[in-house]
Length: 170
Length: 271
Ligand code: SF4
Ligand code: FES
Ligand code: FES
Image 1 (cartoon, rainbow over the protein chains, first blue to last red):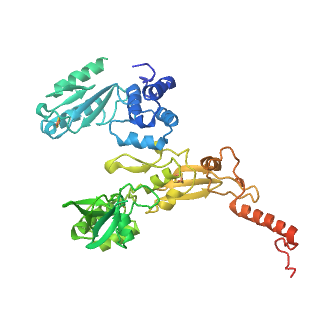
Image 2 (spheres, rainbow over the protein chains, first blue to last red):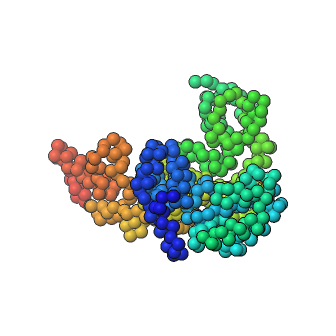
Image 3 (cartoon, rainbow over the protein chains, first blue to last red):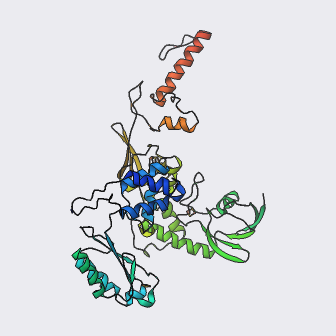
């Protein structure tokens, strides 16, 4: 990741510095500045900042000439977009039917308690975002946890604790 | 253009290809209740109230009349027991969201809706999306729908006071449940959504009488859209009343110069 997003470790400071050259590169060079590819541009912006900063969306709105409200509409419609800063690591626990039956609810509660966050939220130090999802399509190996896009079948509280220990050590 | 043979509530009628069921019904004097439809805007089929039954090629299905384009010969039932049953449920759901709408209250009585069935959300917005579509149509760029599913709501971008509102009031006028209001206070026009200010637009002051006036439509942009880029808009700094008055006086003077009979305001009739 290019060091443009200032994801400060300071609890109070969540200022994000926007690199407009980089934004220009995404919007104009990578996607031709064409409003039809707006969603892909938003995905690319989210990859850089791990969320969609307001200032970046304002700039996007000006460059591709789409009203900011429309962009906001899209950003709030898709669950994969976030308007709030996300953690450096993302832990997703499946709470679909099969995983639920195999006790994923307890795993969610355990992590929520250990990290002091509600599901869907991010720790103050922006290290971890805890998310839940309804079925990732791997019910046979339930319960499933996904840590930074890597899938862990038959996850247990011990597996999760391992992650958290590693995070704490970081 | 292809002409389609349609059976509308048992009566044979003809439709134009591509015409919506709602248009056809209206042409034939058949009433279908609607909440989110305006003939001036693109249909969005948000409220589902206009749901009717269509039988095309032997298959029956429920569709929303306001945005369903007719492409084949079909039979349409707008008031069958099945349709009424479904509509009753839709009314019950809408009433839970917005119990204060007189239109819905009337429908609830007509369809004998059970108003205890769903717990009331009392949000007082039916999420018809008319205001957002109207705003977009006037290039207001202020209101849009945000969120999805049960969390869907009307909002400005980032729920902040908008910089783009032109204060036209189209949203206020079109809202079927009067949830958007507008007030002019101290030279500013405020648009209020659910009682909360979502935009503040400066009103211009009339050069002649000194009164604030609106709407504050950016006339330069209007001139642009009319293809008269950079041409200064006429009378932009005079309120409509003064503009009319000034023009009347001007025309009157010209008339006087030609025919010699002109009275300033208040002067006695010279006979
Ligand atoms: S008054 Fe403002 S918010 Fe309402 S339709 Fe006009 S531009 Fe949009
Ligand atoms: S329920 Fe978890 S993978 Fe299907
Ligand atoms: S009028 Fe057709 S869905 Fe609302």
